[in-house]
Amino acid sequence: MAAESPSTGSGSAHPKEGTFECKVYYEDTDCMSVVYHANYLKFLERARTEYVDERLSSIAGYHEGGYFFMVHKIEIAFHAPARLGDVLVVRTWIESSTKFRIVVRQIIIKKGQPRDYLVTATVTLVTVSPDGKLMEVPREFHEL
Image 1 (cartoon, rainbow, N blue to C red):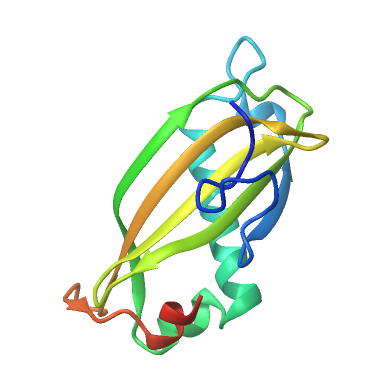
Image 2 (spheres, helix red, strand yellow; image 1 turned 90 degrees about the horizontal axis):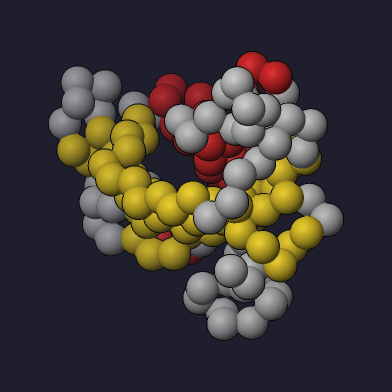
């Protein structure tokens, strides 16, 4: 599958996209030296954290302010495997937001091979208070 941003329809990156690089270590793989499917969730989570940290405030800062982000839904497709030693690039951007939800799009590619997706994901997040009650998404997320 061609690595183009679904929202732009071209080979160029989404204008508000962040990138995060990570290397595949032995602990990330199964007995065939390919990334175990559940470990892609860790790569995606790290990239979302860095995305927010670089653009707004730290996730820890949001926690101190009483905002906690929970995954409401994940849609993920596995197109090709990553292997031991690969360097991955996770592309992340906010596709949309509502009063109570943030929809994040993420694509994982192998560094140096931007034309092929390894994984595509749509992650829907909600914001909750320390006692678990649904809260409105902080306003600055709507600007991303």
